[in-house]
Image (cartoon, rainbow, N blue to C red):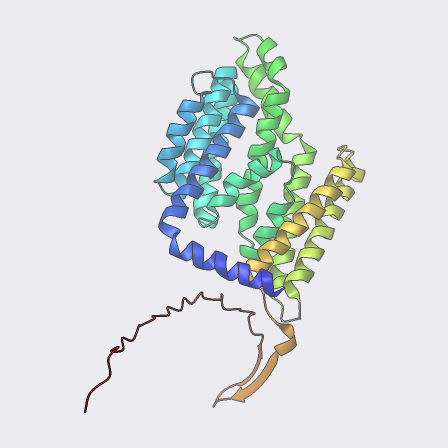
Length: 319
């Protein structure tokens, strides 16, 4: 454990020292991964499905605010859907506009989660999002996560229905609109996933704020169990044919990631908990103080040894 704490301290020192370089690098990596995933999933417009254009836009995103990455990713999705169907692009554009209004109104600080939720769905580990946002965010984060879930299912639905959309008559606009909207509204799996993630975020948030020992660990385990339970109950009620093995494996992997987040964000020593009681003219105060675990990174000291040669005269003095 001491080795991990020392490594954590080294990482914190390294990040604080090179933060001005690491932030643009992380934005570059995030934008590059997001745009490449979009091109790989819905790469219908060949003009923007180019690694050169992706690299140029990723470099631009590295020097812009984090919200700029979301706008670029949304523009990529709309353009790709426009190449497939004008109706798909219009529905996606309306969805993004509503999402941005809700996002900026209720949870403007959840920039990463709006982008990371669809990416985690593509990586088959979406269950890490509600656990980590319950630990690091607020109940309002459920709105951002819900928007990300809707975008994920929209992309998957369009990708799975690309052949059907291409085969429809180009003049039958109403049929295409109804086909896409009905596919989203009647997607029970999306609704159950949004509900499960929202319940998980709220539950994890309130449990981790409790004054009991190991509150964060209890919140992670309880949130993971509730998430799995809601998804399985939804599967039994609506027969959405979810992968039980995928849910269990993904949840276990998500719990491990959440424990890593806990290690870096909230690592305390409950063995040295102190309870303090004091009062003033109006109130009595009962305070529980739990110290953080901190280990100073060992500093390297270099000792310099200077050797000086003494010269002695070879002759003897005469009296």
